[in-house]
Image (cartoon, rainbow, N blue to C red; front, side, top):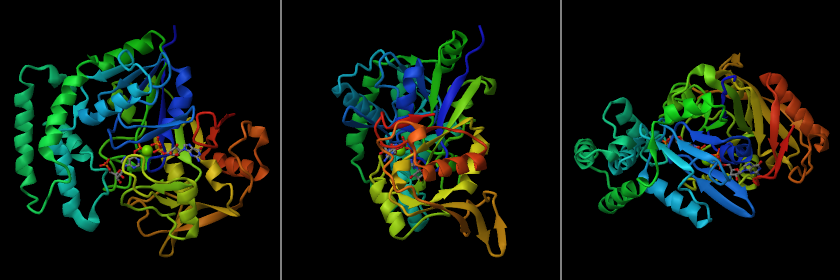
Length: 426
Ligand code: GDP
Ligand code: IMO
Ligand code: MG
């Protein structure tokens, strides 16, 4: 039998492209859904049967019958957030017990990681990253600094001592921030954290790299779910305004323990425009009425933090870069319906800096560039009720064709609303 390949869904912009919706839509075709990086900084929204759900750590295949969901080694887990999320899912009548597996090699976010994240951000003032304050940066820093605590350690007899040694180190580091005042009650959170760690033990802690490879060997189909977006990648994003993991398709190899030759289709998701939360360059950002319209019509407020998202036009310079870096095989365009009422739709085709023009994504993420736009006439037709590509208005088909020609990649799915059903597969 031919070796099965693993497919990947990931975001091509700055996150919040609609990965949760797409994973939920694609899950019926897969036996397993696996997260490979990031942590509870993610907020993945699912909308179905008139209900709305936001997932942070649990893979977005959890609501589909018969699908196994794996939290891979590349993920960082806050036990409190994970167990709260599981309790919310179970309130919806879903039995999570036999559907969720957790890698022993996934790292734990400690209460002191959360404190360090908050202290570091507040000390940076205006230069802050705009982190979600979930402790992501400090947890990954401890992972690469070889001071981390992993899920498998929970089962060690000396877990409490291992925890204490990390905590003491972190408390010393926190002394660097004398002005820091904790935004949460540390003692209460620490108590909840230990309770949640106990509750986590009801799930199998596994060698997920073995599970995933053996499953592929047996012909089991697996979908890997990315978090954040390609422009937030620690190596290739708009550094330092990035997250602390590899969000690109390369991250699936280290985040699940599979060889590059086992990666199959790479579904790259993008919005028909752009958004960003937190600080950092955003060349096509709009500060005018159009930007506000995108925010209001698209409900562009963070699923994890509730912060208003920055909004702007689609950026082909950035999109072509991330399509290349991920080896995207299929594009998926989201939130097309948000543009329904616009007379004119703009797309950045190049950047101008001084008297230089370039269509290459720059080292500094385009901090000082002015975008050069191509304009498209709007379709001025509601897309949300349409379910067939043939029924799309010509102006919208032209927009799709233009993006396909520029990226040399087919748009195989178009999303026209938040609901599972508002999806057009070509
Ligand atoms: P993720 O982090 O990539 O999973 O994306 P988020 O869930 O943070 O943000 C996407 C938001 O857009 C959510 O509120 C979704 O319900 C919503 N959404 C997804 N697809 C569409 C779409 O095609 N049209 C509209 N109007 N909303 C969508
Ligand atoms: P999903 O998976 C959008 C952003 C934060 C901040 C930077 C670093 O829902 O698309 P961190 O907490 O990781 O240290 O924050 O990254 N960020 C996201 N933006 N969507 C996300 O996840 C994000 N996760 C982190 O706003 O700018
Ligand atoms: Mg999100």
